[in-house]
Image 1 (cartoon, rainbow, N blue to C red):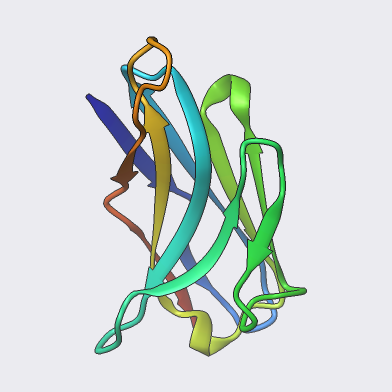
Image 2 (tube, rainbow, N blue to C red):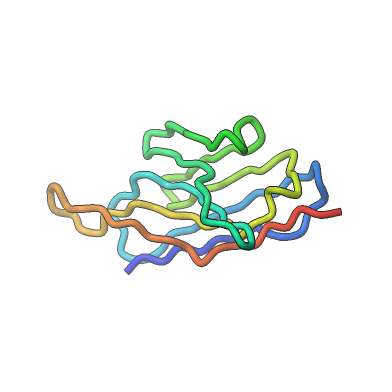
Length: 123
């Protein structure tokens, strides 16, 4: 039905920047909240940021002021601009979206996840 694919991960030195993208495809009527989580080795999945359809944003304290989430509603894309990266930002980053696939009134939304993209911050 709906597939999410992340891109933009890689290896970067401390203090560097990366921009992650997540594209949704499939049967999509409306996408509400979009966001990102991350999971470091041996740790639980951790919330990073989210953005509403109207553009309201929220961030985890650990990334506030360094990461910026944005979206392109026309292209079903969500981005995560990551600046001033630290070794502790190393993780697999997963995007998620709440998607309405049907077109009738009050159709429910469902949450979809991407497969993840690796971000490694190391010198």
